[in-house]
Image 1 (cartoon, rainbow, N blue to C red):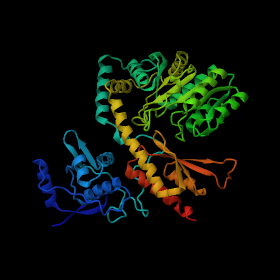
Image 2: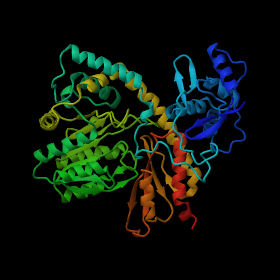
Image 3: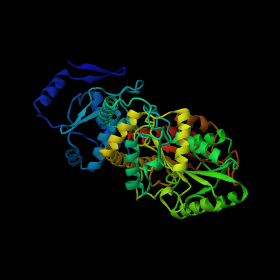
Image 4: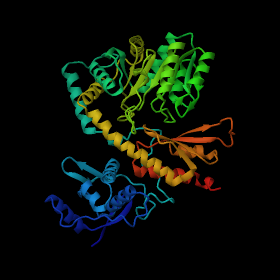
Length: 509
């Protein structure tokens, strides 16, 4: 007799006899029937979506019961005559969403705890590539380029935290420690910066902070004290808003310098330096925020020369250096000649999660010591247990392995996002594929309308509007920063389809 399985309010047909048979087969490690997937009749535009949606549909229908082991990626790729990387990418994304689970040396299985669904108004699962009645994305985040927290290696973190807690308890070191950060973490950071970023420094040049924003705040505060006669900070034409707010809170006048396809315009900066007494320049040279442009080496060397000639500091926010895909990243400013006045700020939040408040500042010892004095006023020290746990993961190479894995996943998501924008919006968008990072900078080639602002806010998408000399307030160029890293390919398509639907009626007018 046919029963019905309820999933988030919906009922799908399930045959109990079949499920019992599947369970028995799994227990003895054999399958009397080979599970087949048929993709030819699906309407999605990509093989990834065809396969992902088919697996989800088979799970919802009961054809793939909880605990069912899927074919290995190589086997399934051969059967479907598709690239193995496509199968691996589908498995990884469905695992991140909660549809599948992987077990070491056993394989990939249908999860026993399926994700909450948002398909309540639909009689059956519908391919997400359709352009009508698309469900709102289920994993909606502040979409400006953050990591996918679903891919964090929680077991490794748990083990490292347990070891750190045991260590501080045994050594009775639960009291206040060094405001500059634990020596273990600074040693691990010093090794990483030397090997990966060409930064030659000692642990006395490194200060551990609670994320890059705290580093920016401390740099701003220290420079406000040391350069009291200079009241100007230069930022790029578009820049990270919290950084600007920080400079304004310390009484600085903020002056903006032009940007182009090579990054900060050093010729325009020279004009600014001839007019203002500049205390510092804040820049994101590796992947400029929000435009994703990488500053050329020629511009970097020119900026350092200007810093030496005009005696100003450079606050280098290197917020996502780990994720560079197409070539070796350009070395940071602080690793180049004449970098004495560079304050380099980095963060591990982009590697794992924003809630992991671990960042660092690399600067000359005088700057670091001044920061330590301010830390004593507001924070005493950081989280010793977290710092020890992160140091252990770095020393064991686990963080490097995690970065390598995430780099492959995020590069795939970047390429998929660019392709999907071009397929859906066609010639109505312009995107220069960034060499790295976790977001795209998308320019729209159709008239701006004020209602777009609210629609973009609803999707948590960062937008910018350029009222240039050849533009009017009624018709500016407008751009969005589209974060792809925290979204699976299924979710990327959902969000882009929502974006298209929010604007399509105006595009076609």
